[in-house]
Amino acid sequence: MRRAAMYLCLCNALSDLQVRQAVHDGAKRPREIYAACGCRAQCGACTKGLLGIIRDGASAPPGASANQ
Image (cartoon, rainbow, N blue to C red; front, side, top):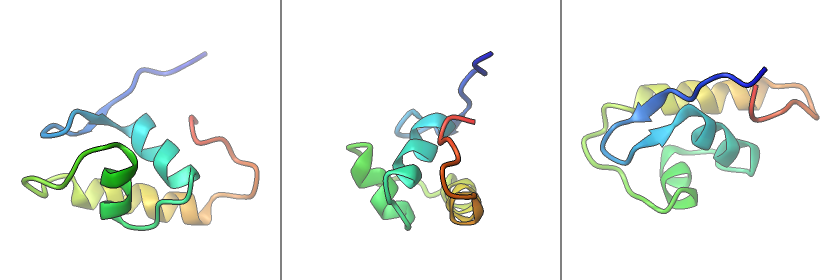
């Protein structure tokens, strides 16, 4: 069953699924996530959440799905 997306960045309307996909595709910094999603940092309120997903992606076992 697919879960609903949660918005992490309201300024850019980025969902956690988009962010996880960007990390899965190689983004290692918030600015790389913004670039992969075609936007840029605005207020910065989402940075803590982005960093958490980056850390989760770095610790995920090889072959783990980005859409978990």
